[in-house]
Length: 304
Image (tube, rainbow, N blue to C red; front, side):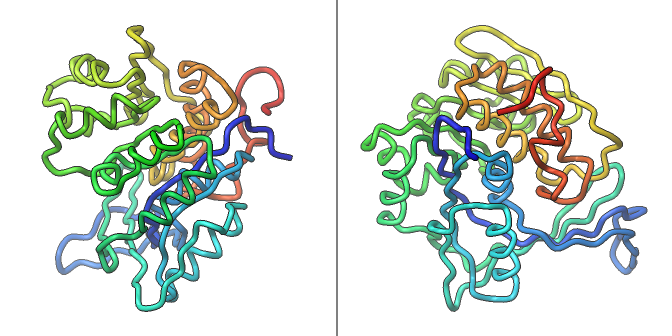
């Protein structure tokens, strides 16, 4: 049974994550290191919609995959998570993006292939999918490239934006997007870069002049937010020994969007999101069978 009040559309490119887990150290040039765990999983922009679907939120995901071995692996993962298949574009002659994730107990690094580049969705695909949903969640960089904001306004849909890496972003370019968005979720490094400030408090002040809800994720230090002029701080939640932080920010967004779809205020949504990201870091990769409502310990009653 699906309990959500709002239908969510996520728009993002998907990559295939090849995860080398529990390395003793990241190898340097000329060295070889053996990992203790190995996984191949869907990753990148797929983590948030897969997380939402596993939380039983009605979720559509607009993405493109190559009809290649990596794309077919990812397609199986997306389907297994329960996502609506209508937004999956499996194309001949396209290479699926791939990331090699090298993870130690301290941190991780990536070697990535971005696929074929170019536009991964058309305006017609965007318009069709946006018309069918209640709320759109995407990366802010896509809003600079595709007419997502205009289509949200045309169909009266709400919008939230996360941040993938944007080189030298200008606040003047982001202002129309952020002023429309219900909330914006950069991590600490991204918030400092975009705001041009040197500490998170100042970043919060700058970004909150552009959007009513700014939530800055702080890794194991939790998150902080300014919501309609009021500041909030949410601590992280411990679910067990962390083994891999891959996808933790994406699954934090899944928690925020779960709360948003159920009518929680942003403060309560932040609390729920601290549980989803806390559970995420106890296994390798963004999504796992462990990630489910029954394994979350939010509040004193059953989660709906």
